[in-house]
Length: 91
Image (tube, rainbow, N blue to C red):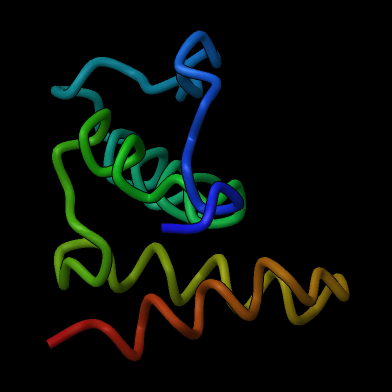
């Protein structure tokens, strides 16, 4: 395997996702944003682990749709792109 694809820096800090308590009415919205953030950083696995939701989870569809609409309105192309990818992955 090429060394270019081997992760040598195991000391790299894990991403931190600021999430409210799971019982909070805002938890799903925060989890949706965390999944978008994780995907943007190339670390969806950590975001899924932190939130308890998988990429494309239908429980988050309404929140992702809202994120998409806001991103399109404000010209945040990368966020909009990731939101569309999430929605395409939703069963």
